Each structure stands twice: as C-alpha cells, then as structure tokens.
Length: 78
Image (cartoon, rainbow, N blue to C red; front, side, top):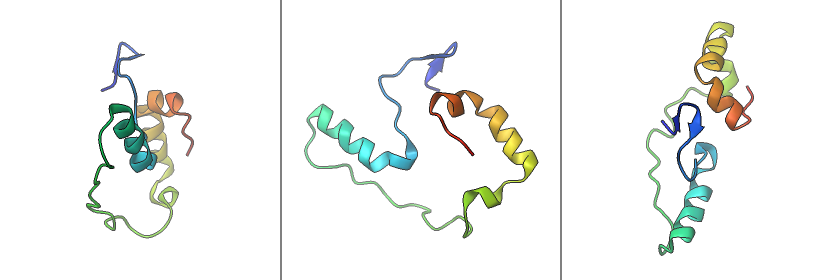
C-alpha cells in the first residue's frame, strides 16, 4: 500500500513496534502541539508467550512469502 511497482511512494513509513515514538516525531515535524493519544485497543487479546511460538513452519514460510518485500525493506527477521 506504500509502493507502486516496487517503488516507495510515501514520505515515511512508521514501524508499528515504535509507533508512539515515531508519531511523536511526526507531530514535532508538523509543528503540532502535544503528542498523539493512541488507544490501547485489544492490547491483551493475544495468547501469552512469544509470537514465534504461535507459528508453524508452514505459516512462517507463508508470511515470509507474502511479506517478502516488507521484510527486506525494513530488515525484519523472524
């Protein structure tokens, strides 16, 4: 959703795992007062444990295939 024919077409992509900090930077860049108020919806909806434990070999391979561009662009690893 942020690429056209493989080319990045937005000014910035925010990482969800750092969303609060990155939104603070955007707010400051735009000269907006204060910080954005992020809701904590579904914060406890996931099962306990590390996310890696929730994947099978097949589901991990599927995620790697479907999200290969994003994994490479943002240097993510499983």
